[in-house]
Length: 125
Image 1 (cartoon, rainbow, N blue to C red):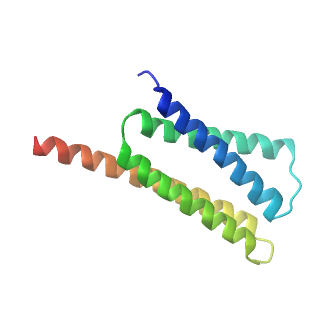
Image 2 (cartoon, rainbow, N blue to C red; image 1 turned 135 degrees about the vertical axis):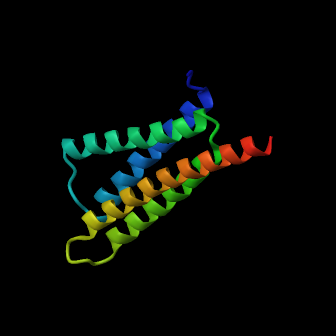
């Protein structure tokens, strides 16, 4: 399956935004010093998010992409808000776990919604 330019652009956009939000959240909001391992982890995570969104966009899974994007926005909002709250030093771990759990739930729901829509359209024909 050939990757479309629009899907590549969407995946790249999500990757860049993910990296920036992780960097801003952890470095600026939490005030932690970042190491090379942090940057590598951010890049790997951002690439994974970009691949997921590019996959949804490339397969014309608009509903799945919308559900994943909503989960993406909610996940990063909850991560940043956890970072800003005072949780006795646990806010960084809790924020990252909330964000990742929300993204996983969004991915699974996006796939379920897209498969359900596919079978619904197929049944109507």
